[in-house]
Length: 196
Image 1 (tube, rainbow, N blue to C red):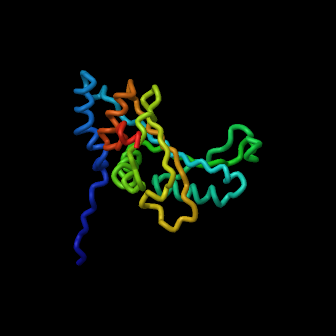
Image 2 (cartoon, rainbow, N blue to C red):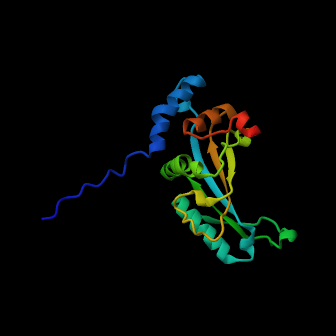
Image 3 (cartoon, one colour):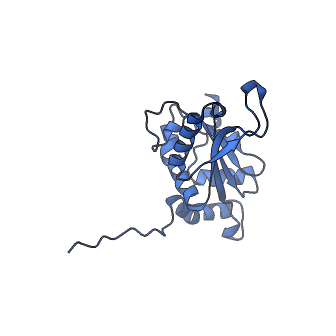
């Protein structure tokens, strides 16, 4: 008779979601004088975008970008198309120019965990993220030059692809959005690091 195997419960919260509820919410509520914890800023979604204009002329480039983005995020990417023609790059309206993924809930927190604890520390000569990437709506935007910093991508990839990551929050100010992301462990550059 074979021993019964116990499966780990699938309903447990991702580590970053648990951190948000237990650590970040009370800290934000206190710092920004929120009467109710539910009023604290939260992360709504993460959009990861890979732009590859060469894809308009070479389908293999787009296929590779889609495959890699799918591996990194655990979700099937959508193809993005040119909204208007750009003659200098020989791109016609409607040409495939990249791919993107919108992550919410569980996948968002799992991606966030890998980004902060594994991928960002693997960047060579990393001096922190630029704190000027916040917009007025409390969203944060930054770019990565190489997607190979994610462990899901093998080192022998033919070309390193850059990507843009947008973290959409419901924060009412840049300060609140920054405090939220710092709570998740985002390594923002200090003024001294930016000057270096």
